[in-house]
Image (cartoon, rainbow, N blue to C red; front, side, top):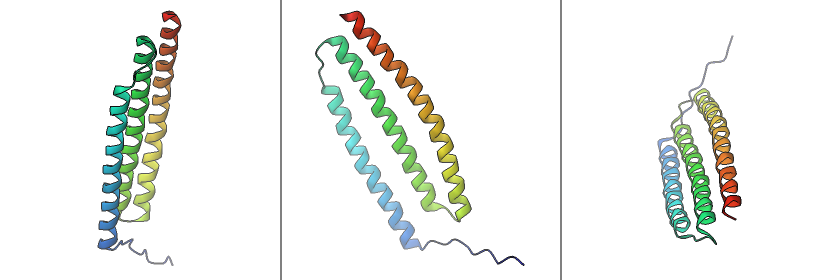
Length: 125
């Protein structure tokens, strides 16, 4: 006979603490991203073409990082609210599948952008 399934219950205080911690980390990250984006916008390159390409590539990389961290925060929120271990595994599986597809698309797009920037830089010489 199978053992009775025990409910997965997280105390409300612990759930509240975890949610607040995730929110605080997200706010800190958003502040960092704002400062980093401002720094990128004020960066100057040695030539206009190189500067524009470097700025575009850096902004693209930062956008990817922001998307990936946002996805991680979304996962954290889902995990904090999970009702049982099966739901946790489901969220983790969905996250991994989505992130692998996202990383593949990002690397393809980033590679094309870097190649375009390199081609543009060699033409400018």
